[in-house]
Amino acid sequence: GGSSDNATLTRFFMIHFLMPFIISAFVMIHLLFLHQTGSNNPLGMNSNLDKIAFHPYFSFKDLMGFFLYQGLIMLTLMNPYMLGDPDNFIPANPLVTPI
Image 1 (cartoon, rainbow, N blue to C red):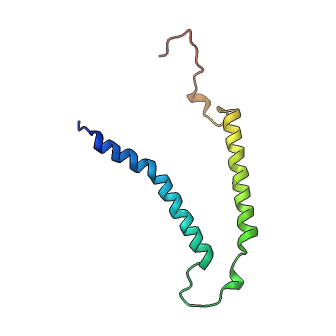
Image 2 (image 1 turned 60 degrees about the horizontal axis):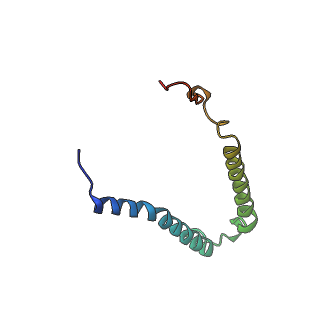
Image 3 (image 1 turned 180 degrees about the vertical axis):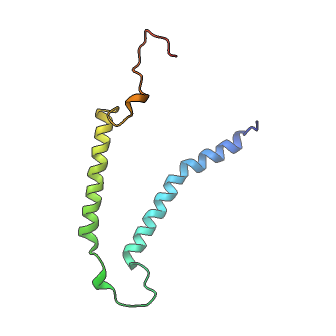
C-alpha cells in the first residue's frame, strides 16, 4: 500500500478541522444577504404581498427544531439504547470471552 508522510497528514487534518468553520461562515454570509435582499426577482415585479413575514414563521420553526433537537439529545443521553436495534446488541459480560 501507499504511505502518507507527515506533510500530507497535516494538510488533511488541517482541511478537515477548518471545513466546518468555513461552511458555517458561508451559511452566515448566505443568510445575511438572503435576508437583506430577499430572493431572486428577474422580472422586477413587486412581490412584497407574497412574502412570508420573516420573524414569526422562522422564529417558531427554529424554536420547534431546537426543542426537537434537545429532546433527541436528552433521550440519547438518558437512555442511549432506546433507539437502537436489540438484535444487534449483546450485553457485556466480563466473565465470558467474546466470540
